[in-house]
Length: 380
Image (cartoon, rainbow, N blue to C red):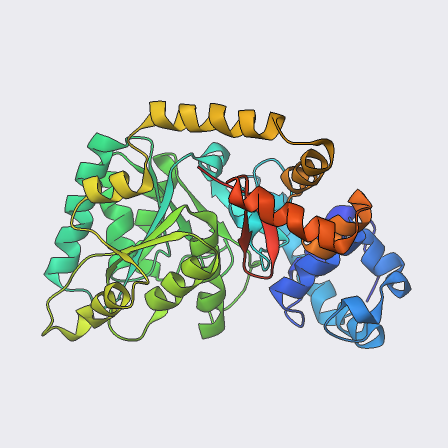
């Protein structure tokens, strides 16, 4: 493989490499600070930090298959100026997604870039084999949501069933909506949703993917797609689901990422509905019956109260002693949160003292921990 000539090409080579997991790719990027160093000076990486030996990593990085993918992707981007490339850590990269330990190092997007940074992002997911009850919930929920939160943005997977119906219901009720794809932006799957996808973009939403052009929508791609849906949104709503399926995976991921999860109660005699009742029964999702329930639990309907929280938050920060404030600011400035090991060398404190400070900051409501033991500034 030819070594990439610049940072963008290196990011593409890292992003399009399916021999490395998303978590490892992000770990490598965060370790080096830029992707180009991975290819120009891979020997600088330490075996103990990675999940595989450096020699094995180099074998996976320098792949002719990946090189061909990069060439195809560069050509596709050049011929399609409507496609935006969004590297991890850049201005338009979804903020909540950047907190996830397995966030993509590169995203591709068609649509309104500002929508990716919407203040109220929620995902609606569910079974492909939905009932009329599930369809009615989508319309009813989006209609009421627009009255309560007209700036809300609905995220889903553009699949058959609840996904497509959620996108359509959002459009019908003048809400923006984003579709996260399990393939590249050079195609729409299923093909029957091409017109829907165009309407989504026209109404200020968009189409988002981590996959390059000519990517076949394999089963594992849909699972990878689900983590983006769960990770980029403040909350996930399971509208209708059986005991198994992608929507339950999305719900589980939302819980793992520390996001709120919701489900509508269902008919106990209907197989398409068993998953929602199971999530509620196991306390993996809040039970809701309306958009009003959802908004109240999320605290989105009380902007003045949120303003007071913000003022109180900053007052608490300003009252911290020098060391605690330094630790807090290190976490606040990190794009992907910070682990104990990453904070330690920057604050020059003994591990016991740092551990106590992190616990104190968490008790004060300033930070929170997520999967992987990473610390983030608390959202409110």
